Image 1 (cartoon, rainbow, N blue to C red):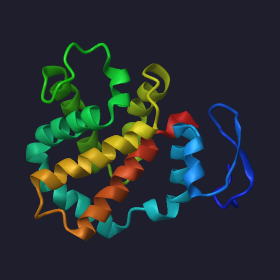
Image 2: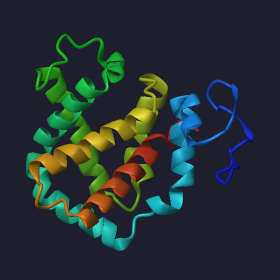
Image 3: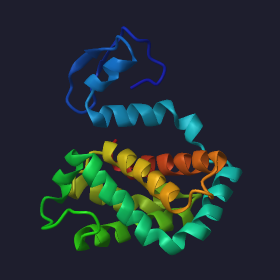
Image 4: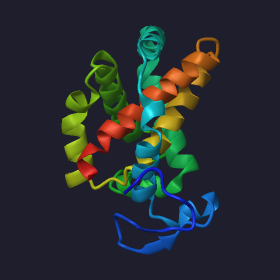
Length: 190
């Protein structure tokens, strides 16, 4: 699909094949979330480019935050499951989805381990997240829109634990990094 489309044109949803007329921004919600996620990533690809300063900001923040990465992950995943209950469908096999439960903490540790790996390989996110992309696309079949939801909750958790460190500039850098991470994770969906 093209990035520079005009509202009023028809586009076919890449997931379900439905023709939808683009009338205004609010009508984008008519698209399935996988199309929206892909469209937003393509539309903002220039904005997602990580500058050297962005990379430095993320790495400096992570030097301080990595000691609490398990807590950040638990907070982010717990918030996501509570605030976005539709995400619970991917974890229906867990006995306990409550805040801080053993399965939530275990998966949060796995997630933050992947985030840590991504930060350590910030110049080649696709390669460092390729295995995770395959897993989520082909085996787990996770809707890639959930990566953006989790990214938002990671930012909220970082702000909760490190309010003084998350300056506006660092916030933008972290948001761009997590968007790039989400994009790399969704690579196999295309």
